Length: 245
Image 1 (cartoon, helix red, strand yellow):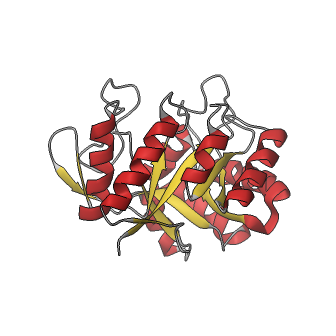
Image 2: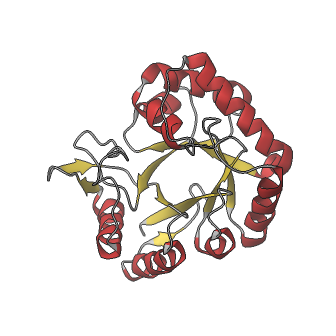
């Protein structure tokens, strides 16, 4: 049977966290940089544990004004330090329950496409957190570098984001970056999971691996969409399970 993990970014003040938690299998918890803080981390970790949801760190740039979505020039060593420090912050709260790491926003995009930044991040994870699963954009440099260093990698796809023909996400600065039609988002997920392809904005079918699907929790209809996606996946014979479970 086909199976897929459903992940969601939590602790970012969207107000849907408690309702979304029973509908997902992996929680990416903001570590106090782009969003969140000690209180939200504790709350999210406790809620995830109650619901049997896997706990992950969600590190990003320290830039609350722009929600960590503005890219900046960094060196591999700095990228590695950013990730290591924020993973450590969540480990203080979650302890050995911490299971994976997924980067956020601009940091996610930069590390996904730049092999030297991916090497900086993966080097830190391989040294300090070799047992953590790395959630990485499907087909990205980060996924490849992570595997080359022996990390377990879950290739990630997005329910509500459009794609370019090289497999990258359409930049949020473009008007077609987000899929706002729920039917289109569901159809995209089902095709990625069952067929291993996604239709790019230029009409190209791009090969893709869907180990885990990201559901953004900051939209007004996030909970309703999560309910529907679970229903549609079940109807299509797709089991929703945490990656590696």
